[in-house]
Image (cartoon, rainbow, N blue to C red; front, side, top):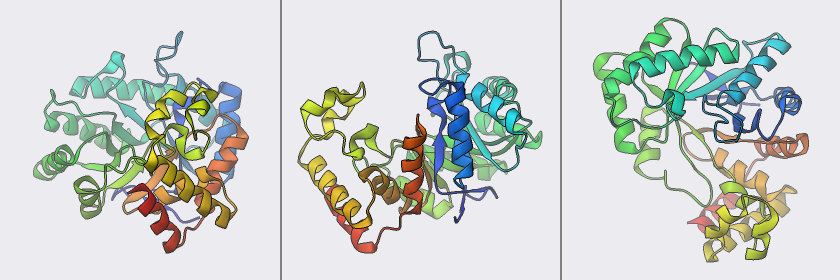
Length: 312
């Protein structure tokens, strides 16, 4: 399986990244270990998490996902064959991107992950109240200390990402090498200035919401279907003419490839300019096997065009 670069960081990964938000939450520790084992055995090597996962769950405080990954890393006894990405900035305990926040949060993430270094450390969201040079200099210090290999941004717009790249260039300090935005057949908002900037600057895109909250699995085709899961109401906005066109195109391409609509939807994301890998989560081995299958699909130009036109 070909690997794709995380910007110009020197790090490359397989074209699918495991979304660790479920670890220690909807996937308990034993299930999480099985999922991570199967993901690596399937030829993949990158796992994304954040310090805030899963602080929103009653009885959780945050750090649960990182803790599970740390236990898994220790149990398997190997660290250098996987890429661990985590984030800082959204957890109320370590909110924002001030220097002292980043430094303290990084130390705690390293402890929970039971590792000496983080491969990709990301700003979970922009912090307009903190100067970019303060944020980027803190990340630079962590890289100098050998605690972080590369840095990335999540949920930045084109203007802010361009500004951050300029600050790094002016100060000759490490720059953001990746961007983590939402991107799927129903949400193509990064196309335009943001995607073009990433292409021009060699920024690797790690996209999330690749299945549009489950809509692109084909599970939700009418309002009656919205009660099938707690997430159903979140996809109601897609039940329109455009959404039906996208599902019809997915069904047609899936039939041609003997694949599932979800696999085709993720394969479409993987085919896009500048996309290093989409994030995808699973809470069962069956779900994971389906998701991993998306990386083995090759869409023809005609199939890509059909999906593009349906989702335009």
